[in-house]
Image 1 (cartoon, rainbow, N blue to C red):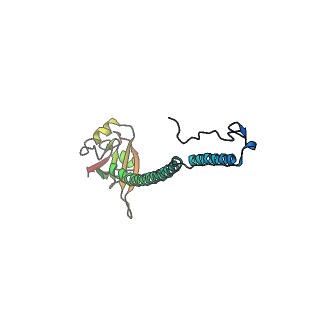
Image 2 (cartoon, rainbow, N blue to C red):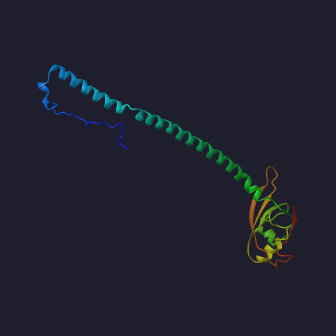
Image 3 (cartoon, rainbow, N blue to C red):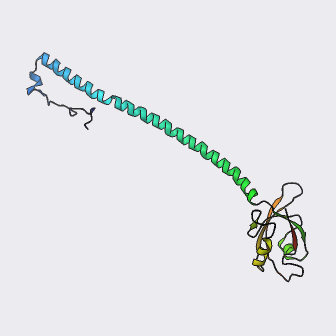
Length: 193
């Protein structure tokens, strides 16, 4: 489709100094005024092309689009901030939930693997190898972890009560072994919570 607003006359002088094949120097006053009116009409038409509604509408659309774009960016930034804050809040709560204590150390025998690892009476176990609060099955899984890891270190995570503030999170390596001089392979007693 042709552009309706494109000028129909090439830019620059269109007549080369001639009107209907007659030199402008030879035109009468009335013909010169008519030529001036024709040129003004052509200039007005060209000006209307430049000032057309399409151009103005385009500029209005661009302005509106910029406002919408910046509004979306601001909304995304607010959503990202809210998501980040929620993630931080959940992030702080998730480890506590994932590492909830499921057993408490009731006794530790002197010279035992448990004492060597640093386990103390009152520690609340949050992780014992692959066992945690979600799968300990009333502590029935602990003997399985111990027997599978005889002579190998097991990562133990616990919460240790502190006198003044919240419990301290600690981690240790406990290596189960049979011939340490006492009963069992750990030398401690755990009670379910």
